[in-house]
Image (tube, rainbow, N blue to C red; front, side):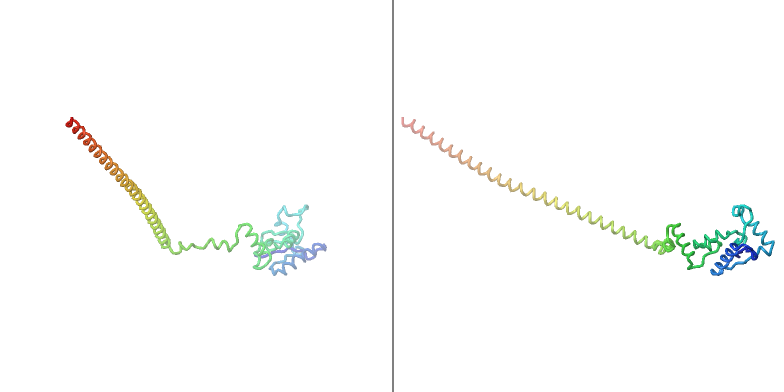
Length: 224
């Protein structure tokens, strides 16, 4: 890409000369290759410049004044737009050239790219990292699945052991409950036996007393 700068070597305007010198000096300071094209001594250059400046960029009289800057056939701008780009550190963008690494314009372009995309280039690298599972194939998935199954099996065994302990505790509670009533029953049986024995003895005594009374009555009758 060739930067073309249209100049007027024999211009009588001090302002135009100053603007031309400013553009050329800045391009040389940036070491940008450019081609100066004189419109004062070459009518073809004058006509080409006037024809290729966009209509909306021409002054009211329709005759653009130098300096006018092009990148090959593409129009870049006049001195005013060049000056604005210089103030904003966007001269390479103005010229349609990539900024050299380390320049202020390159740093600004990186910042603009970060703001536009929302992420830094280094962060984007993380998105391209292939997960370990994908690199190692399905082996890690199988190992993980086996581990999950083992954990589930251990959980089921723990649940079974807990249920067995609860059943054992319930059985022991029932056994203890059965033994307590048995002792009470034995005590009740002993008391009932004692009562039966007392009743039997009392009945025997009553029968003896009755027999004695009957014997006494019989003796009295015989005596009479």
